Length: 254
Image (cartoon, rainbow, N blue to C red):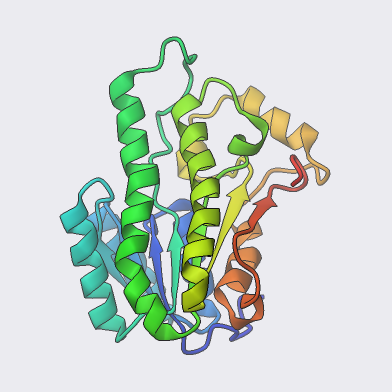
């Protein structure tokens, strides 16, 4: 899949791209022919990962972004658009996902709740807001928001994260309605529990729950999501918008 140049000439921004799903999305988009900017709060790591992909012959670069700071978001988007001479696609993958669970709703820390909502919901909105004028100029802009299937089945002891990803799914639908007149498609991918750095803290029982409950009974890897993401960034999906696509091996269905 990755060798097919279906994103040839596309200019793509991926947030949360230093590691995990975002890192894989960036590589897959570049392998599909896109010029990619990788954005993350982990400056040294995202620069290192971009360099590693560049050494493989891929057209990528990196910028720093902090989704909790509007000025940082605006600066990152300005740098990205200047570097790419425009923007055709955005993957909103950056999120606070580590150390956000394990306690009940009765015990959840209010400050942690606020941090999760600031980054995962408000930050995603602000990144999108900053990108929209440039996606509009593209003539066929694409936005792919990364949610989670936890918002679809109601994972317990993960209250703020689940609520934030439910908000992403709902926000996607509202964005799709508003941006359709500009020919911008907005869709959501909802991954299942995926083997990345951010899920290393997840108890084994939750991993077992997913594997045993899937129609395709195995662990999920970042590469399992790339095909859907590339499709949603491509011209093949230009009449698809407002949709939530669970990619989880059949653990939960729409």
